[in-house]
Length: 560
Image (cartoon, rainbow, N blue to C red):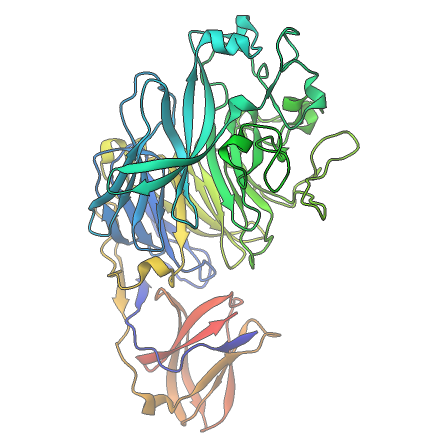
């Protein structure tokens, strides 16, 4: 359905002017090696947030590749960063920790206002624990965080770990829920520990001895050989408010887990309680059934994956799970994909299994696996967008891609921020420009209310000659005579314009809401009250667009 959004466009908007490329097809910016590489009219409007791994500054850019805002910091990211609905930044930072020295280490969580002031900080970094990789703000304002917790060799042996598979220490994982207090305080109001949900078939003298295949709800402490301390390496989490459940990615086991957040802390440490009745045991796990004693190597689907997330309601593939599948040591060769799965859930909320006691589904619902393939061996993420597209962060390369449902790339950006935060020059390459993840926020996101989003220049040095000009501010309604613009839903490549006043040799231009010029028509003639079809070489996706006549103001309309 297509409907009028607003009859007058009063806000200044930008127009992307590119002397080197057309915006009506996949347009590569000539000689661009950094920043905005290519764009098409089909990409979803919005702003993209990212915090380069080897710098201390967080950046907000528009889809033209222009810097809109930045937040300098004293810490490199540790690793995730989010822009919140109250206009603040929720950012993790890496601190020096001699005990936990794995990739993705953090240690401090900060809330930072638009001006760069730290309004709240909370440290989880000691010889016994350390925050790492990801955090997530809950609807009540509390913050979930993943943290390592140290276990001694004796504790691991007592839990049934094969002593030959132990080094000097052993790390487990926990999730804590922090209720912020003041500017530096907080209270842990809920926590879950992987250590409370172990099973093993090595030492029959231990209480948790059982056949692993009989307990898919538990974690086999002996899966994963070697003496590495970082046994699990969880690297991403998401929260589903409707289900009150958490999904967690376990990199070293190549699987994702879902646990019940409705439990008390006591129930989360047990095997009963909460909405599920299963306490803190796994409700669902997927990606590598060998971890719980089922299947073979042929059944493994995830390979060192990152960034599990539920797809929001109203989106394509809503309520399913999207995961960036790094493809590390993938059967058949290393290559990355973005995968979507649809867990099977019965009327009682229980996750289903097949006849072989492996969690369903047996196959992916959707995957982004382009030809030629791409590969990001670590970090990385993927985000579903409202228009059905996916924002992909190939983190190892610092490359962001928006791809449509058919797998076509409609936007491509490469971070120019390298080692020690050094900004690279256009035409060259940034050294160590990896990015843990990028996140896109829509134009009308609540957090942007009242903020100055005037674009600056591209981040990269010596940028190419393209710029964003401003549409004229204000609308003289007599020019349009409250004209009505609409699009016929059965003809997505056709824009219908109904003139309230006669038009003679008018120039009509179509923009998206971020100001990119999508299409223009010249010598448009129309009698008062007459409708005319203006054809586009592309279908108009869901979003807000602007029509300008003879360069005077514009009229906004919504395609939904």
